Length: 119
Image 1: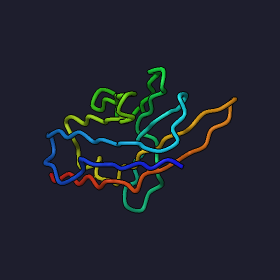
Image 2 (image 1 turned 45 degrees about the vertical axis):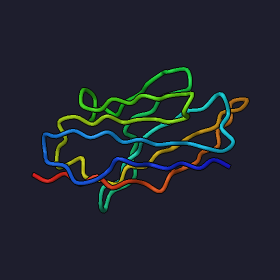
Image 3 (image 1 turned 135 degrees about the horizontal axis):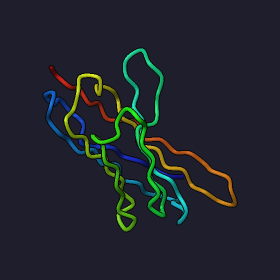
């Protein structure tokens, strides 16, 4: 089992910045992907950004240039730096870790952290 704990959410004014963190613990494989998803009220949960254990990064088009994902493989922690926040960024942000083995992946989710952007 893998446990994920997100932190760093809160209330921020439009144009501001914040950094989310997600610490993973438990049975973490050396090959794994970590990522951030978000779910706004009444909408589906969508990918924001992901990063593999090898450092390959993927961003949703809507956040390119404002969001930066990074990870510390020693601490098993993934970060999401959010700059120039917009009211549309208001959502619950979820961390996901996917353990990879022989081409198969097993997903684990955190409970989420709420980001609220005031205009």
